[in-house]
Image (cartoon, rainbow, N blue to C red):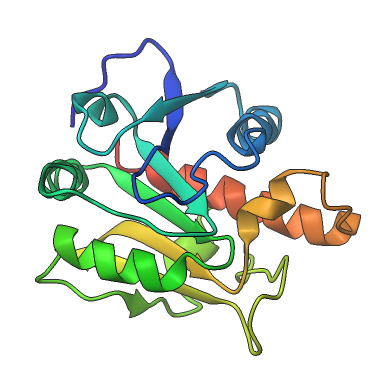
Amino acid sequence: MIYLLASVQIARLQYDGGGDWYNDPELIPNITKAFNGRVGPTFDTVQAVVKPSSFEIFNHPMLFMTGHGNVRFSEADAKNLRQYLLNGGFLYVDDDYGLDEHFRREIKKVFPDYELVELPPDHPIFHIFYDIPLPKVHEHYPGPPKAYGIVVRGRLVLLYTWNSNVSDGWTDRYGDPPEIREKAIRMGINILMYALAGI
């Protein structure tokens, strides 16, 4: 993996298809500020915005993807994302309701040879800094929240949270109770910590 930036910066994925990839622009600034305050000064708190086909994705240890609607990866997008993920990058995808069917379809273009698998509660991403189960910030479907991943040669390269909406807890715009936001922030710090472990 190649990192060209002087500081560690998380990038939001600007995908095609019409979904609102840009929603809640404060999410990455907020969670990186929380990480810097609780763990140590590590991240640039300004998010980058990158397209999946761009070489710029290789400048970032983690890409973040969310939204409510359609997603479309071109052949160039899929090829570049695959190379990024196979070479040490990490992608966190948070379904903000309505993303699921589109994301599952498009990720098969990136990894036709791997399946999204449900992560067990003892997976290191739930224990790397805080011991915390996947929180349910907002309920979009009946039942518990789920965390899925794609694992390549023993490494989790992609985390996908469903019926959880962890990233909504990184902002106060929805009026969530403090205890719910705290769980979301702790989970977010774990995700960032796990992404850093790949550097």
